[in-house]
Amino acid sequence: MLKKTFAGLLVVGTAWGLFSFKDGSERYFDIAKNLDIFATLFKEVNTYYVDEVAPSKLVRTGIDAMLKSLDPYTNYIPEDDIEDFRTMTTGQYGGIGALVGKRDGRTIVSLPHEGSPAQKAGIIIGDEILKIDGVDLAKKTDNEVSKLLKGQAGTLVKLEIKRFGAEKPLVVDVTRANIQINNVPYYGMVTPEIGYLQLSGFTVDAGREVRSAVVKLKEQGAKKVILDLRDNPGGLLNESVNISNLFLPRGKDIVSTKSKVADWNKMYKALDEPLDVQMPLVVLTSSNSASAAEIVAGALQDYDRAVLIGQRTFGKGLVQMTRPLSYNSQLKVTTAKYYIPSGRCIQAIDYAHRAADGSLHKTPDSLRVAFKTASGRVVYDGGGISPDLEVKEQPVPDIIRKLMTKNYIFDYATRFRAANPTIAAAKDFRLSDAEYQKFISFLNGKDISYSTDVEKALDNMIKKAKEDKHYEEVKADIEQIKKKVATNKSNDLIRFKAEIVELLEQEIVSRYYLQKGLVEATFNDDKNIVAAVDVLSNPSRYQGLLTSAKK
Image (cartoon, rainbow, N blue to C red; front, side, top):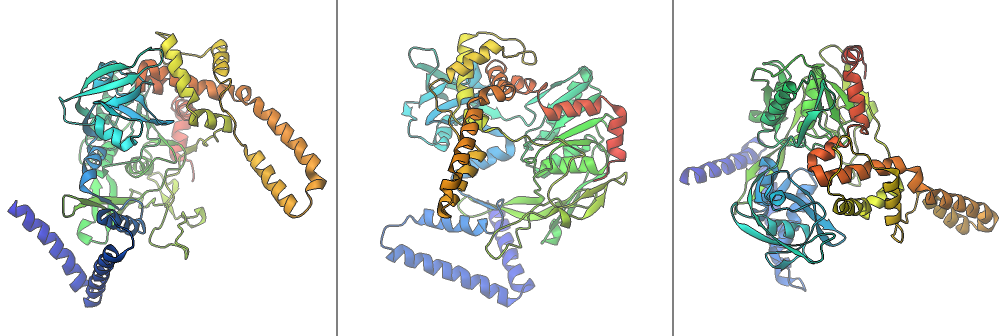
């Protein structure tokens, strides 16, 4: 304990030394002065403000606002939130192993993890949890519900559940366990020769999980692999290095970090023998692929090791580390920018240079700097990693947005599961036309009203016309357009039948086959996976994208 205390004091002493000696006495005085102002201001507010104030809440507001002015990734983590932060970085927690959240004020199970205590206890998707150990959840927040469900492994938690089709609430006893959230929630074969694996995070052992998945795919006959990084928010930097190393030769540069503290500048290399440097590889990316996911995608692109398919990534080229604070709290602080092998930093937003109004802007394409991959292809910094083959994101129709936000698709799948004990395999299940008509009947009497962009534009037009006193002149034309729009809206359930059926099939399949089924149900409809299979099935096209494509 004494050694740890001394080490902590040494860090603090070094920091103040940097302020006083490196930057001069003026900077030291400026810091001391502002800390003194803050302390005296807080004391005066606490003493004289007309109403009682909560000191901890007030200081937390000040801390959060201060850090928010830097970037979204520099955060204060109080002692009460340390466990949640630990779960984010390790993927481990004590609980029942199910995704649970509020839907229209109800606490609903959206997905029990396969093999979890929740699944073993018979809890299914769509179950509404009414009480946890006798505590009514009607007015509890998601965070409060989560804390009630979590606990030490081996302890018992009693759930009162309302299940569709059951006359009375069920009481289910669940024994908590140490839950490990898998970084690879699914891997399997898309075709007899093409394997697929989904990487959803970069917590501890992500590299080992990817290695294991690829080995097993090869045992099943995979000669080519699709690595899905879509919507992966990133995580531990060293795991991104480990995963890149699976497909790149030992000794290759993977990523470097550059910091204000020179001692923290570091080049991360592939240290191990790779798993496979020849197997054709496609990486799927989306606009929500960020941080560590971008390191993997960028490194594989820079060495022309994989074809990237999808959308341009998020553009988070910042590195964070945690620093201990007093009272068991921590600071997660941005300490460096990272650079991938070609030398480019893909950070999209410069948080250090804000507009006069405090707003931020992404780096425009015209200012992105060109770099080159190993084969000479042109790639760019700033604003994320651009794919080698773009698959544009499709806009979500208003009718589908309404059906999803009102949980109608989710609720219909729950009813379907209660009425149908079994269905075909996830890859083969198809919703019949007769069943789709049942879904339309299910919607009768429900609120599926929404305003289209055209209707919103018409409302603005009417407002302006009335302000300019031209409304009477155009009233008849506007009313005619409104009628046509209303007629079109009434047919949206037919017009967008294919898209709605796709979502229904996925939701229904998840009721029987959980996460794995949900993934397999997308194989035939997912435009990114279809494009990846097409590229991997055409060797000349695959090689062409790696050698001759220009950004």
